[in-house]
Image 1: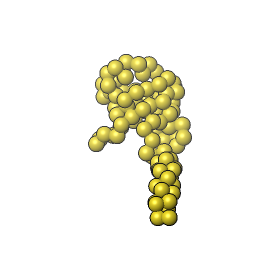
Image 2 (image 1 turned 60 degrees about the horizontal axis):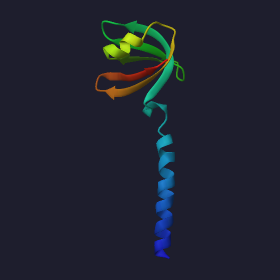
Image 3 (image 1 turned 135 degrees about the vertical axis):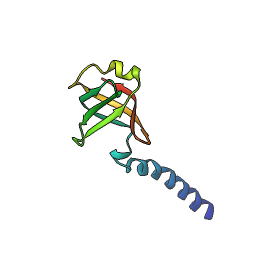
Image 4 (image 1 turned 180 degrees about the vertical axis):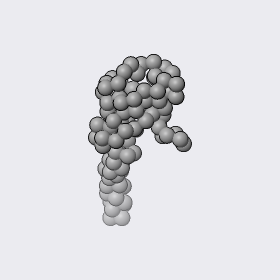
Length: 94
């Protein structure tokens, strides 16, 4: 009986884990989607207006990524990593 209870508890815990991860919300997401509103080639940054929140979000980017950022008003999905001093774009999809 105790083994069955333990087995059921383990199965329920494993089933609940993905639900807990989804409850983190958009602030824990590794991607933002929005429209490019500003580009600063010297600083290697670009800013989008987030489609969900409407807030401006600025990303630092490598030269390779900046070479593909061709103009304002384009819709993009930005995959990013949180850095100590802001957000760093690791991939951009147009």
